[in-house]
Length: 527
Image 1 (cartoon, rainbow, N blue to C red):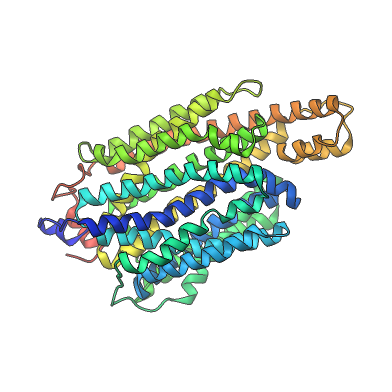
Image 2 (image 1 turned 180 degrees about the vertical axis):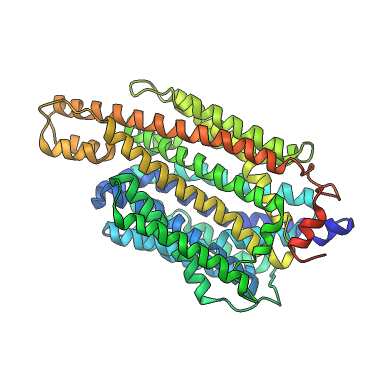
């Protein structure tokens, strides 16, 4: 929590320069948003062009957020040390170079490697932008509005991504989709040094290499093992990998307690609002992100839409998401954030319930309506959750707080796709009922995934292809129902938990912001 909030003194209000600077900070947000949505749209095309297997498709999708999530804490601390604006500009330049490499990848391995480099560079963007917002907007009400606008820009980028990306995928090769963010990066590199303030923590210590390696080692083995166990059943090696990831996580936490200058200041977690806001981001993003993945795949594989058409069908959800981002700060000033976030998550659950009623032979209207409700309800969770996390930390720790906020969201999104995607694969293969008489090649492809079945159907005679696709699409529809139903039940429980944990936090902008102000102050070393 900021010192001004504790003392009761009014925080300085931002002026025109800060709001113009916010527009500049929106550029990396647009970039990340475009990458997420275009990646989902381009996945079927690039998988076919590069001959990617089902596992390779998952890694092409997952490696970027996993690398990003594993390095966010490191980059947040690095920004505090060398300067948040400097790190932002370095990361933007590196992201542009890696995007070009991904666009011209010649095989799945090269694309996975390029996406990994993009993850390293992307890990510098979000902590820098959010921590700079905390510097530029000290007033809680203005900060909430700024974060809402920043989040809304994500939705604007999501509109640009599917439309422009879909048009490019319809006219050019799949790699062109990775080049969409390059112009935005160029603008950021030119105007960023002029409009953005620099901020660094003069007391920040050196980075601990062991802690960096431990944080990475805690993510990858656990995620890989979980995916393997869900896909292929019990095996020794994946189980050991999961245990190794947990072990590295425990070792990382213990090391941070001993260091004079830790990579992650665990004292931040002593704040109840900080913990609850992070939990909200993690659970909400994990479950709604997985639903987004399956909706995007359904539009192209279940209903046969082109990438451009799928992008157009996603527009209602993007509009409702933008509304949620913009309205949430206004609601947060009038009602307790716990109730606003909790009600938003209930709207998400309602949307998921609608999606479970979708059938393979029906149109996509019900799917899109449910998806729009999911995105509408997620707006308060993201906007108010970020505001609570950033507002709970002093300026010198804002980079670490922003990194933890993004870590919970990005890791939640990646784990949601990995865990529920693996669950979906198991459901698909368990319910797949192929008719007799199909060629062995078609059977093998259909048992891999619906995407593989669609590809194999191109080489079959029409009646055989229709029989193959009918069975595969029916199994995929059941897969979507199962995954979304599980996500809805878990999100309902998350809504109740987060509401209970945040119920003490009053509406945004009050000087005595919480009943446990003194505890929060102790947690960040201010009392």
